[in-house]
Image 1 (tube, rainbow, N blue to C red):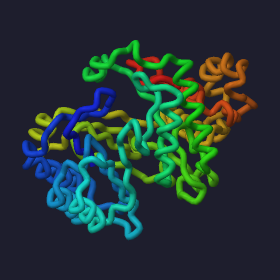
Image 2: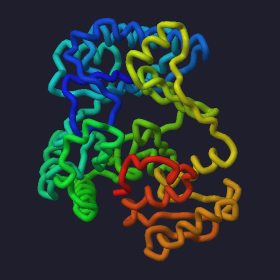
Image 3: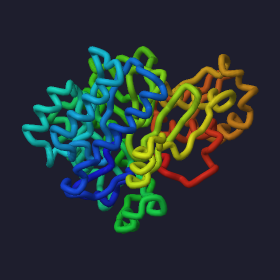
Length: 359
């Protein structure tokens, strides 16, 4: 459920968000409720194992607005008793009333987002140093979160105009970004966290760490998850849905999305059918990103991906990847370069604008 509003726009943010003071969106919730009606009418009732409230800042909704949306989801879908129910929060705007509401609604996981001290931590920010990163890691660990995500800031001013306010000369270079990322990983592991996939960390007893051990880890638009669902349905402006047949994305502009929904139509703006070679490549990339290893044998074998293996040859010479017949493996100490290895199997990697750096 995408809530595309914030009380303050962060210059570094790459999300689809809009500035509001809260008082100018009183009727916002009626539109996603209508969208839920449309989607549920089209696909019928389904079992739901996870709900994720993303943003923007979902806690910009009042307790009453949040409960209206939650009850509407509960009306149309069969929510599992052990539902994984997560919400992204700006802690500066969490009241006791909101906290009580989230408990009442069954929210059992919270992601706090303050990029200089949060559990969605970032490196590569303007003027950020290795010392700054170390301080942030230690402060975050004092609060003992079960999971920590560690992301590199992606400077894409051609994609997000607000980032033009950031002085590019103040950003760490590639070497400094790598040093920050490696220090953060080392500190988190020393503090008892397990390194999960590419950019997540979890305590050993957390379901995410257990899934990584069991090789049942998956990755979706919210990051790593301990289980795979048949479908992920996105509600709200710009929300992306992942279905067995492929992908679909909603209109990004709030007003346009709202007009289409209120007219009784699904607000889908684009889609992609995933089958055949695309489906196999998706499985390869996910396996590498989750397990640092993939067996190409059940996916048509190495011969079917000769061009990708040729592209990996220079990386193999540098020790970033190991190729043994059908088995492609990223050594554990080369985990930071997993995205480079995965991109060799991505048919769209060089087809459009770059959205993030490899490190």
